[in-house]
Image (cartoon, rainbow, N blue to C red; front, side, top):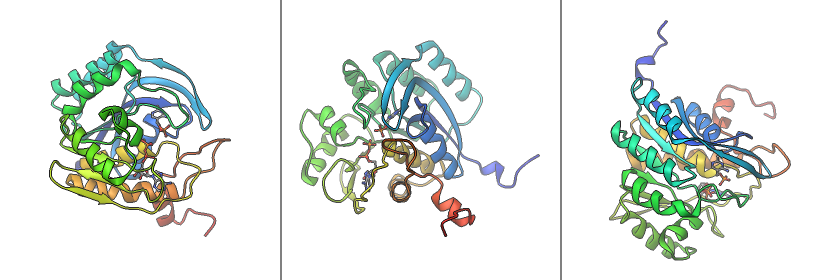
Length: 277
Ligand SMILES: Nc1ncnc2c1ncn2[C@@H]1O[C@H](COP(=O)(O)OP(=O)(O)O)[C@@H](O)[C@H]1O
Ligand SMILES: Cc1ncc(COP(=O)(O)O)c(N)n1
């Protein structure tokens, strides 16, 4: 059976860690892909035991199974975009970079995940260099938050001026675009997109939200989904920013700590599935 429009179905891959509580990592990415009407696939780099209160254990996958997952996907299915999240350690990073190059992957969005909101090191400190030298040059867009930008540049990043300088320094590391996220700032949640020449400001008021688990994962997956759908980078990023803003506005009070964002608010609303209206 062929579904109407199936021949136009776009396919995106997330290479990231599993979050058992479903708010971040692979699970957030697949939800974001689905909400954009994009078929989702995954390469799991690590399994975490975590919930809304913290990360309690991590098991890294062997590089052999990372290679095999990439091979299984790329040798069979056309991949329209790739999002990369938690990569844990240098061996994992080298395996991913090798696979992306071998299979000529395109539309690559790298979220340089380092420390979870709850304070757990999801990237080993000795793997930062491998992330910068092996993966960043392959990125269409890299999406650091402020602490990650500080780690990458060796300078603290707070003001919008600092953000512009950091975006320019990270651009020199090889990605085609840098999206520096302002979620950790005081004041407006303004992000900066830099293409090597111009800084574009993506503004949104700060939402007084407690439930922001997985915001960065969701944003980068939404960018990948929009690239898979054929939008140019500026448009893909600006649509993803609208998507994450709605997802935070209607974030879910699930669990005892920092809950996840709501991926399907707009879809549920259109379908008349929201009971409070
Ligand atoms: N309280 C908030 N209100 C509005 N937007 C937010 C808020 N917190 C984060 N964002 C937005 O969510 C996206 C993810 O940013 P951030 O939370 O900094 O990423 P990370 O999860 O990597 O730390 C960015 O577009 C950021 O501006
Ligand atoms: C598997 C995985 N990947 C990424 C994050 C970062 O998300 P956050 O910064 O919201 O904790 C996470 N907590 N877990």
